[in-house]
Length: 209
Image (cartoon, rainbow, N blue to C red; front, side):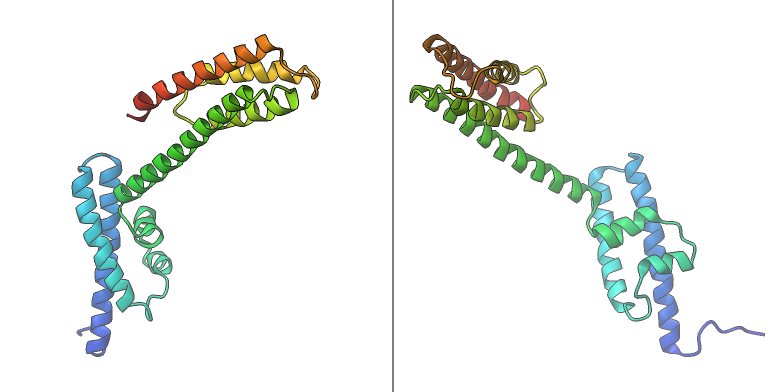
């Protein structure tokens, strides 16, 4: 006795689409694992992944009424393909594209922090030139500079500017708010700021490569 899996052409098409969706999810899972294990190159992975994602999006749109949840579809057929679900449903782009986007975002963030550091260096040096030497004037400027330097991950913990600002902040914290730096202290602080600024600028090219 012949058993029919479908009753009409429409039902047959639906099951064929189910089979194709199943195959795409399984293929994506294998591709993700191959990429993670470095079995295929990044360029090969990206090309194949983009094809699978494109096919998946087309098929998912076609099946949106019969398969409203891809996760539920995978559970129903006991597929156990977490990497594929993440790539096809959650991310929607190849891992290589995600990594490039993350790197670009990181570079943009670093650039803004570098600009912030430069601004804080210049503000602190200019303030000393304008004879703003009271502790309650100098301390906030050095704190801002120290905070911005610490946000920049490309600088090592023992970077000259970080160490010197920490020393000065510690020294100022022991003084009263209305106390003022002596001419010699102000001159030394300006020298330390200028020296740290030059070291900071020199560190950027090698840190960015």
